[in-house]
Amino acid sequence: MSTVQGATIPPVRANPTTTTVASPAGTTATRSAPSGGFFSRSELGRVLWRFRREFGWVALFSFFANVLMLTPTLYMLQLFDRVMISGSELTLLGLTLITVGFFLVMGFAEWVRSRLLVRSGAAFDEALNRRTFDAAFAQNLRQGGRLSLQPFNDLTAVRQFLSGSGPFAFFDLPWTVIYIAVLYVMHPWLGHASVFFCLLMLAMALWSNHLVSRQQEPVQQAGLETSSYLQSKMRNAETVEALGMLGNLRRLWQLLHERESARQADAYELSQRLQALTKFVQYSQQSLMLALGGLLAIDGHIGVGAMVAANALSGNAVRPIGTLVSVWKQFVDARLGYRRLETLLDTFPEAGPEADHDPIQGQITLRGLTATARGRNKPILDGLNAEFRAGEVVAILGPSGAGKSTLARCLLGIWPDTSGEVLLDGLPLSARSRDALGPQLGYLPQDIELFDGSIAENIARFGEVDAEQVIAAATRTGIHDMILRLSKGYDTPMGDAGGLLSGGQRQRIGLARALYGDPALVVLDEPNASLDEAGEAALVRAVRDLKASGKTVFMIVHARHLLVVADRVLVLDDGHIKALGVLQPPNPQNPLSPIEVRV
Ligand SMILES: Nc1ncnc2c1ncn2[C@@H]1O[C@H](COP(=O)(O)OP(=O)(O)OP(=O)(O)O)[C@@H](O)[C@H]1O
Ligand SMILES: [Mg+2]
Figure 1: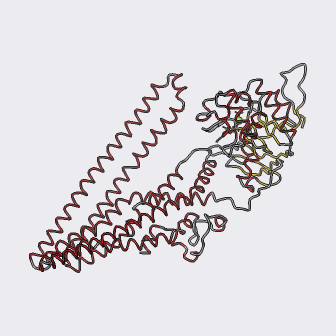
Figure 2 (figure 1 turned 30 degrees about the horizontal axis):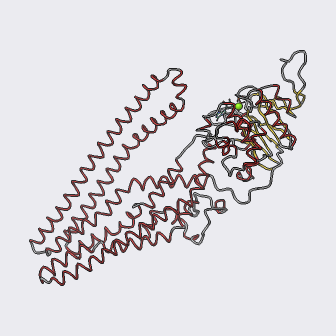
Figure 3 (figure 1 turned 90 degrees about the horizontal axis):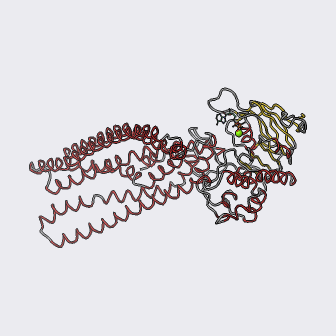
């Protein structure tokens, strides 16, 4: 039975010497045991290994369930060979009662093993869902925000396989051999015939699996393309309507849709054909086995009871193959999902407890900071060196595409491809735990993204809402009164992406979110992009407040009148620092003169 278990749980077999490790959800061990080596186990493998006892029990109950599966056969044999000959009704009653008792035990064993698997599946999910969520986000960040739900689907696939009837197929398979052996004992020809039918069923199953999976891939691909096409167009419905693009988009969609439908129809037809063929073989098998038994009984090789029993036994022998076939696709998906999840969790290990949790001051050093992106042959930021004091307000200027927003992301440690260093209080950003660092940072992205939820929840970053702090942040950005004027005040729902608010309102709520919880380092990417005069005045006040309380502020701005709050100005051009220094007062004779910086 252990080999079967090994087949279901590949990594468990990899290292029998470390069976004593009972690591809590892969904490520090993640670093000490890199994946890939023959003797190392992945984080996922370690989690699965914790369920070895449950699988042992499932194996035991599977054994009982399968032994008792022989009950009807034995009952039939007794009925024909004993009761029918002796004609004793009492024997019949006794036999029947014993049989029913066995069925009860069999049902119980079946129930217990399913329950065990369902529970283990749930516990497995629980042990991994937080890590999967974190790792999926980390991967997303690295891929430049291209949202992939794959890890979540993978986790579901593995859990569903583990808690469904999938593992049973493997636990029951050895019984096929046992049933066939019994048939051989009854008569060699019965054995030969059942081997033939098992092989036939297996061959058919493998062949149909091959056909179906070859068919399914293009169907899924077509479905995916159609839905992602639709999604992007639906999101931009207003633009589509305003610019009269509907007809063109519809034509494109129709093409995609028709292709998807055609492929679906092909796949359906194929699966129907295969089903009909399988049914034919299954029914033929039953009758042909009976016919063979009849022939042997006529020739006096076996009794009538054995003839009927042989039929039941051969059915039992084929059954695990049927189960295996029905869960094969699930198994393949789960195995693929398992591998992907394994790589994901090992690529993005959990931050160890050694991470620094101290409060930050906000002093920033750039050392040869270079930021690149896939598909570009030139870096976006090219070897920046600079030093910023804690408590300094720095305005970042530069033409469109100079790399300002990229620099902002590098300062926060969220740009995936960088070389060189961004040191915060002398330590690389990666040395700190993100959970501890996040609340001490403030960030207003250029494309403000608010989340579906109330205004208060958004300002409080979806943590526990601290009313006092929420109001403090809103007051600082001058939107407290505006929020109170809304029908539900701070509980007003934002709608998806803040869609129920005006552009200026969104901007200021994004600003309040950035200032929530008194962060020590604040990065604002064009905070005045959709602000009116009052909003800009509030912004200037907020930045002055931050400066007065010793916070470090980086502010990307285009408007000259906002530069008055800055201690220094950093001018970026084409990924290089063009100037870093104090702003020179504008020439009173020519207010449109270019900005001058004294280095
Ligand atoms: N994810 C990305 N992948 C590839 N290139 C990118 C990516 N993000 C930005 N870029 C490129 O990097 C350069 C700098 O972009 P960035 O957004 O930093 O400019 P910016 O100075 O903020 O401009 P703007 O004033 O228009 O906001 C641009 O040429 C842009 O095309
Ligand atoms: Mg930008």
